[in-house]
Length: 129
Length: 107
Image (cartoon, rainbow over all chains, first blue to last red; front, side):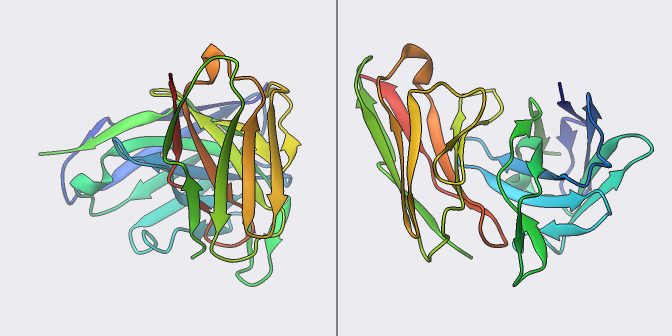
């Protein structure tokens, strides 16, 4: 059974870069049937999609974060990663990695879009000096 | 971006009650809505995809309906394990967006 596990620092200083890895077990990030994404939830707030990557390396990002975010896939190591630069306290959140079935292709934007069916347990990242 | 407006933002219900949560999209999104259950400290759990399809591990008391701009999630008989926050997500158009959530509390 596919499992996802986030890893990375729990504390990041303001203006620095948040880096997280999502390790995939029981399946492969190289599957053409899925894309891989990141979602976050700030304390007391709702869910926010951050970005996604397809096995080919094609990426799509939330426009509100696009200038600061990078998502990459590493097929040889079977994981994918998130980098968020110039963080502030507003980036304090629980970060989740997730898998999405590649079932709906948005022709207007040229991106895979869809739900997330399998999630990692999440990792809390606090931005503070 | 497509806005997803959930209502109510919270509700109180008793075990055994039928519960209905609504999500309205700011423009038509066909059938492309998913519903999740979220508990504190846990990952979101996919319940419904494509508006009405039950995820394989979700209990059958959960159901979804709707198309276009209005969608509902129903719980036929609320169980103790169902007290949580529920989120809708539009999966039709980039960027995907979530509703604000509906917290289901014990009455």
